[in-house]
Amino acid sequence: MKNVLSISTIALTAALSANAALADIKIGSIFDLTGGLNIYGIQQGNALDLAVASINANGGVLGEQIEVVSYDSQSELSKYTQFANTSVLRDGIAAMFAGLTSSSREAIRPVFRDANIPYFYPSLYEGGACDRQTFVTGSSASQQLEPLIKWAIEEYGPNIYIMAPDYNFGTISAHWVHEYAEQFGGTVVGEDFLALSVTDYAPAIQKIQQSAPDFVVALPVGANQTGFLEQFAAAGLKDNIGVVSSNYGSGNQQVVVSTQAGEGLIASAGYFMHVDNPANDEFVAQWIDAYGDGTPIVSVAVDTWNAVHVWAAAAEAAGTTDADAVIAALESGITFDAPNGTVTMEPGSHNLRQNIYIVRGNADSAFDTVLKIEDAAPSYENEVCDLVASPDLAEHFTPETD
Image (cartoon, rainbow, N blue to C red; front, side):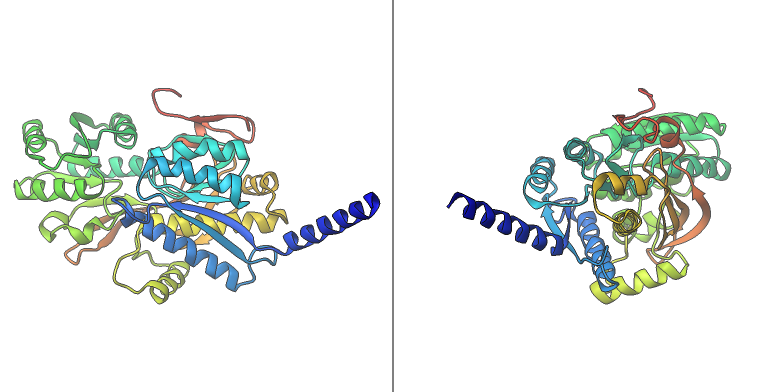
């Protein structure tokens, strides 16, 4: 009886292994599909679903279809950690795509490092994330702010006022404004870091008036940003003081603000919907076919689309979804013909090299391109983070700690 049981057990194990080999490849996602950040999270989720559908329609990855295990963080940081652990312990995922805020990234990055699962962060950010299992497909401050500050000093003058939220995106981005101001002959004449709960910007606007800058770097997020811009325009400052931002338009703020507030405002990002190239034409057509044309596509949607395709290309190149092999393929310099232009994964820093666009708001609640920066490198990340040489390095570098 003992021998029969052993043979049966072996046969059952072999059958289960065969079935597992035929199973779909699972990937995970955690996005803010509800709650205050859902204007970003919904588009991230839609972009991931669209990318998976596109890849599956073309044969999948390694001949297998991709299955998505999706979680809604409800714009709550604690749920990111909860769902990250669940995805590792229960779901058997080959890769994770998750997060909008830097705090969400930093909360879950250690989970996927410990589990050795490739984690893709598809959002613009303040820069400096360095982790073997983490890959950033959004643009960093060194890609967005450096050309933006240089352009603004040349266009408006050297005197700069910083308006930023009082958390790591705002404070670290502000440090970079100081760095680039000094580099390009500018001077920061004032700065304000405000809580996300602030809705009355009159005191901040009075400080701006007293400082008399040539331009303001406006970095509030979401509704805070639109509120500031409306009050700034209503105070009559917009005619004499320029406004630039590295996150305006990232949540379609240009659709919400009045023409008085939005027209002429300068933004920079890795993607805007009007970008003119064949890959973007195809992507936009697929998006409209799936979701309609009621809402412009934002940059984090393309960051997510790019992340899924870059991972799929790496798995195909590796011939497996095994994490170490996929990471090695990603570190070989995987490229992808993306909606924002060709993107390349930088081997050492795990950040994407990509085009950056400086745009001006127009009277149609949209943007016109002012300047295209070709193939912008994540220069700071490449300088401080070499994961090929130091694969055990796991740190969020900031200008104060590098």
